Length: 68
Image (cartoon, rainbow, N blue to C red):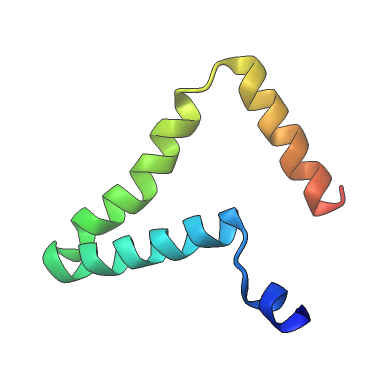
């Protein structure tokens, strides 16, 4: 049973693995600078789409996880 539990991925790990796979595909099909703009731009636009209270909450949670 423990071996089966060790092979399960969390949702965040699945999202990260999917992001890496999409990034690699973009690098194959597009010039490197276009892929870079997409990889950096999508999270930046998502962050800027948050309202100020959500941004404060996200920064607070991030600092808390870092142990600050």
